Image (cartoon, rainbow, N blue to C red):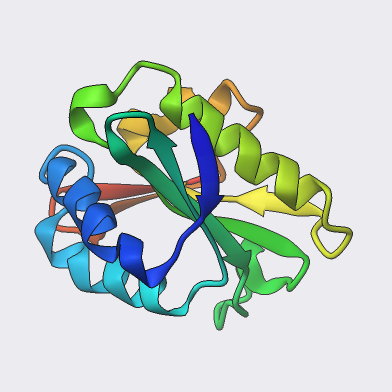
Length: 151
């Protein structure tokens, strides 16, 4: 297992990961947002397995100011972005490895004091095992039928 920074050469592999998780974890209409992240994020990573290529990806960014003054209005917050594992490889520890490495890197950066994520309710238990606590729920927050869980 090898984790490394994302490069533009990984784009198609990451889009294939996204596609493998539609419709269970992502709505197809979110694809353009994912592409925008790939094109503009600095701290994004891919996880490779020997003989499998890129099997997971995910990153983090500094929170943007929240115009409503919500919990993501502080620049000292790291936001986990677009973490995913190829659908047929779920529940094999790859997501744990990807999350642990992102949290380790965030923890090592003194600019950050906390980590937040927006995810689906079905992912709540995964993130709760790592200390995340639900702070907000929003029906259809990502897309129709895709509720948002802020943690």
